[in-house]
Image 1 (tube, rainbow, N blue to C red):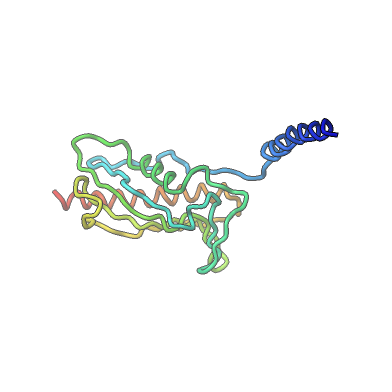
Image 2: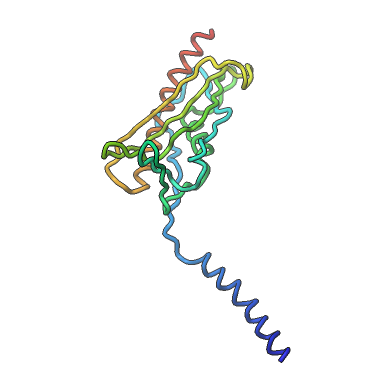
Length: 194
């Protein structure tokens, strides 16, 4: 009787991990997305712009792509996931848009919070919506010094599809639009500081 119990325990010890592994290897309908990191515009020619710190708002910390269904309701795509954290992706996208750091140029440091980066549904229309609060400081002044410039940047791009892939493309374009505006504002700050 004891031998039969040991044999059953051994068989179970082998079967349980195989069943669990089968569940992990099974097909998944989830799709993973990353922002388009190809630079779209021209980097600034006379200044450097660097992201010092960028934090995503709590609803954006999840890996699922967010849908702002109304002013009070947030949903998430259950099968459309971000491949990386929102703050890391936006930081990388900005680095691509702002270009390499060149020596002997003034450097503007950005800190801020990503408030929205997802699908926005309002009045029967859908948009790729990006909104972030950004503060700009000259490098060397310290993170807690008063910013030289503070602004909420926003991009809303119409969506004609419900496909998350199309949403991510338009979110990438929205961040590119915001990067262009940041470059314009940073150039003005640089000129005023001289």
